[in-house]
Every structure is written in structure tokens, then in C-alpha cells.
Length: 564
Image: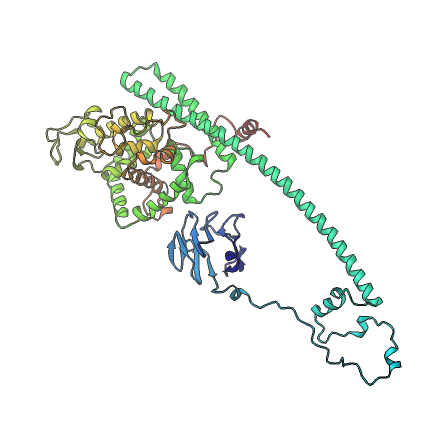
């Protein structure tokens, strides 16, 4: 900590009950949140694990939101990072606990009273030696007196007694003073020995706890590594199952059904085993309800809970708050879902996706493309005019078996164009998504969504017609296997290869799926449109129970894998 930090402390006050660490002055970084790692610990359901930080940087104090679920507010305004004024009210969550933060203009302002030592007053009773005394009187020396008897502190202050008995070592001392000093030394020696034992015991306990924590950390790392391997195996099974279903659909070979059943059984066992890992490591234990929904949707779209970046979670929450709950997004979402339900689109889309081994949540891709409008007509592009609920361009529609109408080059609804046929275009969309899912995306649902927006020529080997400005080899250099081909890796290592429009597209589809799982939690009044289909699509990482093994058997196996 710098001297500047020490000279300008910050005072944190609150009247909230069950708050630890408040009503104190701090000279270094202060974390406010729900867990024990925070200097100010708040027991509240709206407060995140580490909700906000108060840090001293660039010569002043700042209030920083730590990617909290419900936001941090300074004097009623939601903030991410702002300088702290001399006095301000900070609230954790819109209706959460409040704190009063004070920064003095001078360091001394924070002290309630100065602790100054009391100096012994001049002894007015002591007079100068009588110069008129006889020489015999001057030569006569009295016996040494005990300072305790000859000195009576005027005000009885502790400071004066300390100065008299324990600091004036060069003064002559009487028996009373000597006994006091010896008694004091014995007490100090005893306290010193006790202190040494306490320190030694504390250090020993820290060593034991630190060693245990290290062992647990290494064990958890091994378990997480095993979990990632199992998850990669699940995605491999997803790819194989999707390809096999495609072959069965094309050839109608009944002998392939046995292979399919065996693969699906193996995949179910892997899923149960992976759920054991997730539960053992407590992935969902410290998450808020909204964070839990985000993690579960990521799992459904083929991304492991162990790799979900905090930045992605934050952007999903921002998309929900700023777009889907905003003036433009809310009516669009509500009216589109109502249209899908009234026209029977919801059930058919969900069932068609499941028939092609895809998550029913791809339902929300049609929401983003057209708002479930079968007669939608897109703008004119260099590849033609996109039409229908799934917004197929002419070449892709023909590739997946749809008849393109004679008015394909006009921005009008063409009843002879099968892109406007809801059922036929939905089946074609499922096959299209299935192909991407089982090849370049390697069972990553989020990469499939990105590819759908970006265009199939960005994710297949037909790259000669890429638009200007987009890299010719969008996925070049990324290993083509499920463990490496995931959306998080793409964002972290190849962020510049994906247009900002596509990233926003993925966030809107994904966040709509999150809202759909629990609309009431996010402030919407409609019910989950996929409630009858969601449970069958994928077991939740937090709730799934193993059918072929008991939970105790899973934990025993996990412990054996992880070792001591």
C-alpha cells in the first residue's frame, strides 16, 4: 500500500443488519459481497459473491462493480466504475443493502478524537533550594525515599504512573517501585510466552489448513480435467449421433437403428457421469438464480459449465436488460412468441429439432430471424433475397430441397416459393443446422448460431464467395474436434474473425433462450414456450440424477479418479 493510500482512508458505514466489516475505516482495497473472502460481508439474496470493490487508484478512490448480477448503484445511478466523491450512498442491487462511503479532504478528518499523551504538569510544590540554609544543613543527606511515596500524580492519569514507575530507569528507586517493576516484568514474560504459543499454534493451523486447501485444489483440478474429458466425449457422441441420424434419414436403412440406440445409450451414461462431476465440484452452488439459468442454457447448447467466461455471463445479462426488456425488444419478444403459439409453430419447431438431435432451443433462432413470420422477406443482397421464417437465400434453399419461386428476385411474398411453407422450411432449417452441428461446429450450438448468421460459406469449405473484409479461412487453425472447437475458444483466440453483428446475434438468440426458461425471473408474464420440450432436450447440470448409477457410486468413482 502506498503512503497516499494510507493518508486518504475511506469510511464505510451502514445500518443494515447482519453485515460484517462495515462501520470501519479502510486504507486499502475493500470488497463487498456475500462470501467470506470479502472485507464487508453482506447476507442478502440480491448480493453477488463478490458484488463490488472500493479501490484506490490514480490518487483517488473508485467504486467498481465486480460483474454483479443485480448491479451497483452510486447515489441511485447504476455504475460500472466511477470515482468516489467525498460522500456518497452505494447500493448493492436495485433494492439491495445500502452503504454510506465517506472520503475526507484531509486524513485527520476521519479521526473522532486525537489520542494525545498527557504530560505531567510542572510540580509547583517544589521550590528552589533555600540559599540561606547553613552549610551543615546542606551537607546532611536524607535517606533515599521511595518515589511512590514522595510522588503523588496530580490527576492520577495512567500516563503519569507509567512515566513514573516504568520509564524513568535512571532514577533511584525504592522497594515499592522495585516490587512493582518485577511484578510487571513477570506478567509481561508470561504474556510473551502465551503469545509465542498462540502464534506458533496459529502458524501450525495455517500450515495444516493451507496444505489441506492445496490438496483440495489439486484434487478439484484433476476432477475438472476428467470432467472436461467426459464432456468432450459427450460432444463426440453428439456428432456421431447427428451424422448417423442424417444417414438413416437419407437411406432409411433399418440396420443403422441398432447402432443409433447403442450410441444414445453410451451418451446417456456419459451425461450421468458428467453430472456427477458438476455436482461434486459444486458448480451451481454459488451462482445466483439468473446465473444458473445462463449456465444451464450454455450446457444445452453444447458448452461446458467449466468454461463459461464471466464476461459472456455479463454480456448476456446486459442484452436481457438493455434489449429484451427495453422499449424495442420486449414487445418484439412477446408478440413473436404469441404468434408462434397461436399458429402452432412452437410445438412443430421443437419436435423437428429434437428429431434431428438438436436442442429445441434453436426455436429462438427463428425468433431472431423473422419473429416467426412465415411471410417475411429480407433485403436484397449479393446472394439474393432471403425469404420465409428461416430467411433462406435462394441457393441454400435449393441445396436443402426447397423449391424457389419464380419471383425469387422480387421483394414480395411468392406463394409458389416453399421458403414460405412453414413446415417444409422448418425441416430444411433443421437439416441445415444439423449439417453445421455435425461438421465444422463440432456439436457447439453457439457456433451453429454464429454460422447461421454469418452464412454457411463461412463454415464450410466453399469459401470462394466470402464477402470482402471477412477472413477467407474463418476456422483455419482451430483443431477440428469437439474439445477444441467451442464458442469460448473462438471468442478468446479468434475474436477478430467474427463480425460484431454476429456476436450480437448470438447474444440475442442465447439470451432469449435464457428468458424463455424462466420468464417470471426476468420480469416477463408469459410462460416458458418450450416447457413441454425442454426437460427432454438435456438434463440440467444442477438437477440431473444418474439412472444407471447411484449418486454415491458416482462420488466413489470420482474420488478414485482424482486420488488423495
